[in-house]
Image (cartoon, rainbow, N blue to C red; front, top):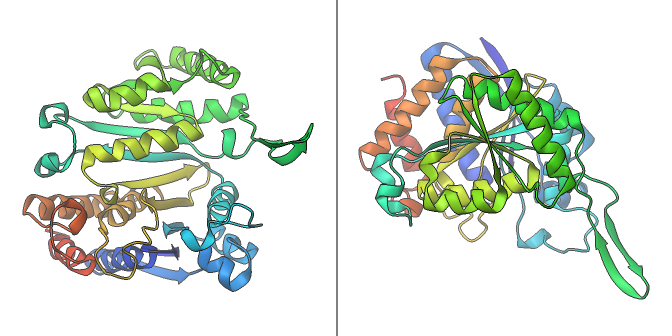
Length: 354
């Protein structure tokens, strides 16, 4: 089979980890007789430098016309001016909106060989296997009005947390669908004791729950959820929440796995074109040193093969290879080892198809 994949390496360590993920995909193509047509485009700070825009219309059009999109990371101190007309993160939000990807899936699974790499006590990590669904195109990051002005002689900043019923309903339906293939439990996270948007969120979650009586539904306030992620994460299975809460909770959950470099993500919508990326940032402090952990990006390609390209055996092959090398003791610096970015990918590639 032939697939067109748009690569957006981005900034910082993005090009390094995407480069290794491409090598893994090329290995998959060779072993399983597929053809991947890669086209590389700029997005983020590097795009601002060259084109004056974090995401050009041409790049977005190329992404929409692809079978899938693989992103590295965007941002860095160079583009952190709060008064700048464009920032790398704006391009990321525009890309998500342009692709129509409303659900960000972030699996958080603790590998037994890496239990000691987490700051949590080992007994708290037993059985941790969480799938977080973060709503991606609504909420505080996209609501209007938004901006800064002067009112009554005082400088003011305004952001609007806005949700429509359909935005909540579609991600809830996906959460329940995915839960049926797992432990049949959905935890909906909100702030319904304070926020009107969360009251609508909880109302619709309850409605969808009644339509799926074979799946257990529980409602948890976001402050309680953040505490339980640390004190007893094994109680969670499928967690679904709004945009900003999901952004914060999934970064917190990354410490369970020992490093943000370990975790992948998939952003999905009604189209088959998905956006796949590691959850880590651009890590400018280690960019160019060849020591970044490529596993989060490589596992993101496994999610790409599964969700967008419908190649389950190939996806499982990558996941088994990653599991094998971690079990065997392969480690990059962030998880207590000395392997370079390239060496870690080399080890994974050796195990693909075994």
